[in-house]
Length: 242
Image 1 (tube, rainbow, N blue to C red):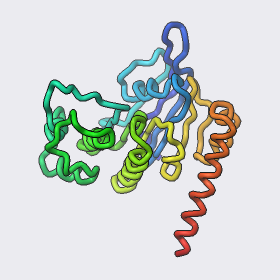
Image 2: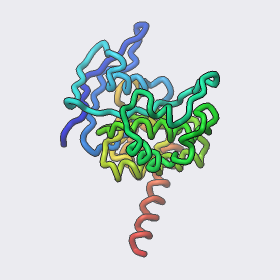
Image 3: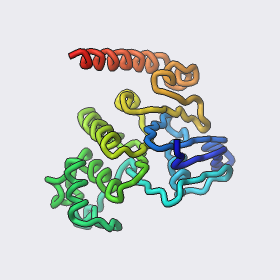
Image 4: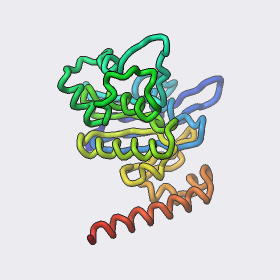
């Protein structure tokens, strides 16, 4: 497996406290990794370090040469006093031609809102626009920081289905922070449970039974995930027999 990003012993200290302590992460080709953990666990900070937005106090990060990364933040607050259309927003700082923009708009389901003002979009529409913008440079790695946090249940389901489709069709790697493990269970290849340090990691069904996971999220969450995993497998087994 070719590594896109390798982080070793990453430590971030603020006001004398460890935000991250000796964290090691490797993102490889065709990986789909979801980082979970309580609020304040250092999840977003880890992404910032991996994208070189923040220089950690300790550790080492290496990246594949000329690695292209697409980034989808938690949210974007459009300036209501500055009128800008979706189409114009997508062209900002992006050297994409009209053909590639139209193709990406169709892929993310925003072709009908390209001429709408950014400020009037719904939460779901705005997240799809941010996703489209992150894909315009044809990234090898897509990094998302709780992209569905502000969406309703229907919007979350729709967004994660779209993300899974992009993962399979583009054959890219995805690294995502999310609270919605049950939503991405089918797609995620690896889960990293973070609480300033890596508590546990592995395949989703294994992580949810780890004592560290149960300690952080409780038995109810672990049992819910076990039930979901069983239902998901049963559903697909049934589909395979049709």
